[in-house]
Amino acid sequence: MVQTTSKKWLAIATLLAGSTMAKPVSSSTGKSSCTPIVRKEWRTLSTQEKADYISAVKCIMTKPALTPAFPNTGVISRYDDLVYTHIQQTNSVHFVGHFLAWHRYFTATYEKMLRSECGYQGAQPYWDWTLDTPASNYVNSPVFDPVTGFGGNGPFEASDPNGFFEVPGRTGGGCVSDGPWAGLSDVVHLGPGPNIEYNPQCLRRDLSPYFAARYLGMNQTALTLSQPDFGWFNAVVDGKPDFEASGVHGGGHYGVGGTLGTMGDLFISPADPIFHLHHANLDRLWWSWQKLDLSARLVDISGPALLMDYSQGNSTLDTPLSVGPSAVDVTVRDVMNIEGCGAVGVCYTYDNVYTL
Ligand SMILES: *[C@@H]1O[C@H](CO)[C@@H](O)[C@H](O)[C@H]1NC(C)=O
Ligand SMILES: *[C@@H]1O[C@H](CO)[C@@H](O)[C@H](O)[C@H]1NC(C)=O
Ligand SMILES: [Cu+2]
Image (tube, rainbow, N blue to C red; front, side, top):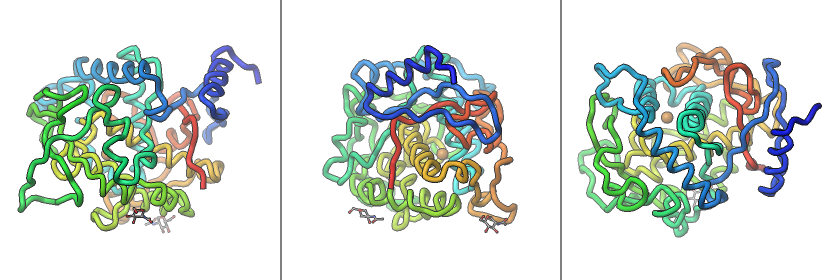
């Protein structure tokens, strides 16, 4: 194979990062190969790379939305376009077989927007939460750093005793008190829940070190990775919608968002920029699992087509995926191979993966 200059450069950059580069594999649909950009863990980025990423996030929050404003008066920015499409599809892309595929496309679309609309040169970073357990390490995660990260917790606020749920071990709930979005009262424009009318709010966090340690450690991650087929893998990623039987997906949402935080709201959780670092790591876990038996797992998809409901059968490779006006509609097949780089779909890789 002819080594293009950019491929050579990527190989060198990856070697410098201290890991072996995953060669682009030809996609299951036989599309041409390409040079995937390499996603890295947040704490391994240089201070400059972290600043570049955060300024790109701030930039996309200022670009005007593509979603028609009426009646969606809360959809102001390109960033909101993605929060909005997540709200609209909350009941059709969670607790389904195509949950991971949809979120793979969603975060890859965000990554593409940061690069093409805000001049960001890097790849979407991921948050390897296993590095921030046990509980005593959690609040010191570089992801929560007030200067080089996304800021940390909000001050403690009591939750409604008659409220919907109470996340065990929650410690905050108020507006973030440090980091890039501290002191701002109009970071989140939509929600709570499915509300799509303009409702300016601060970014809230409600960290639970206990919950994170329980569901985001290497033990839970290894349990997920050891599942024999996609149906089981997907089920263990999510666990049950019960705090006593959660999985890594809920671990990140409720470990950051608790009861009152933005990440704990199933509808508007992408309004917290940490969402995409968490979902990039879930995606990395899926890719890690796929790579354990790649040819079989590039086509392994199952799970309920509707929310915890098999009445319409399983999700399949033909299940459609839409992220609204920010990217073309695709199918699950188009995103099964992250290095596939077809005419549509996704094109990136990870600097390293989890192994058993
Ligand atoms: C992983 O460790 C945490 C913290 O000790 C514990 O609460 C949790 O139950 C463990 N999970 C599994 C799957 O062993
Ligand atoms: C869904 O897929 C699973 C696992 O492949 C299979 O056992 C089950 O019969 C399928 N269910 C339906 C309704 O097609
Ligand atoms: Cu989601």
